[in-house]
Image 1 (tube, rainbow, N blue to C red):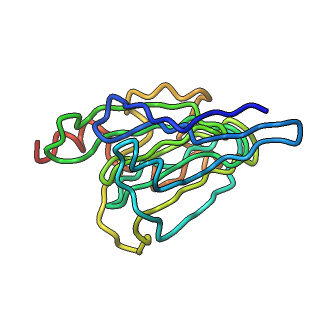
Image 2 (tube, rainbow, N blue to C red):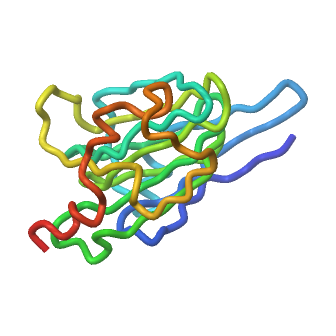
Length: 185
């Protein structure tokens, strides 16, 4: 039996942490604790509960995001692999404009603070990306977005901005990261 203990690691974005959940593996497979409130609190992360949990199934090479709603998110992949990208869009943040990327697979999570943009590229067909929100998403919810293009992110699979199977019109036409962070700076 192999046991991986819960741990969190800081990143270049204030409040964005990389989480390794507790995992127990044996010849039958692996059990992962997606969320244990007491473990997060012991690590200094105050996260009480989730009001909404979504999973997307995404084709290889497709990009979703970069969206920064006013909610904290815990993200991971349930199946497959993804390249996660995060940009600090928070006014007044000491790390505003910073970008962090993380290779996501089952057993790697990212806690994304409110106001930090979250996006990903599926690296495998049928990648199941799991979002846990501390607030229910509502149409017209306050937030910002920036284009995944021109953010200085080296996506593992080249993005064709004219391919709707790879990038939505909404994400393609979102403002550039530099323009978002220069507003109200």
